[in-house]
Image (tube, rainbow, N blue to C red; front, side, top):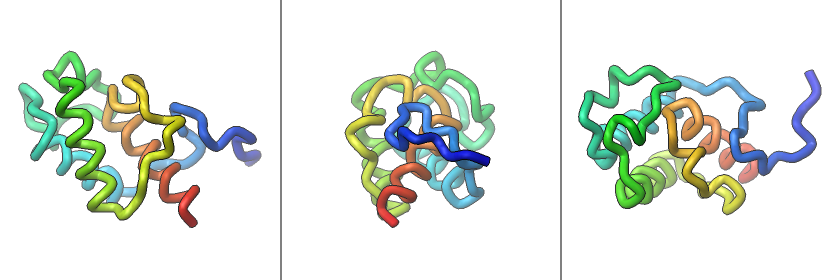
Length: 101
């Protein structure tokens, strides 16, 4: 399988999310996302903005994920679409981990 030559892709779908990353994202959403539903039961592709995520809460979610996973989201993925779903946040966190290694 050939890797994306542009690792800063905003959707960062080159790898399949690991369970630890998914748990970290859901924990951050549960604690900081201010969602109208339980973050643990949200479909991975559900639109988090429709479920109550705000731009302010997005910053707190990002900081919590970065802290728990000891990664830093690259500037190239800091946009609204990255934080629109559990799947896209998880992909961005895993991209950050790949870039750090």
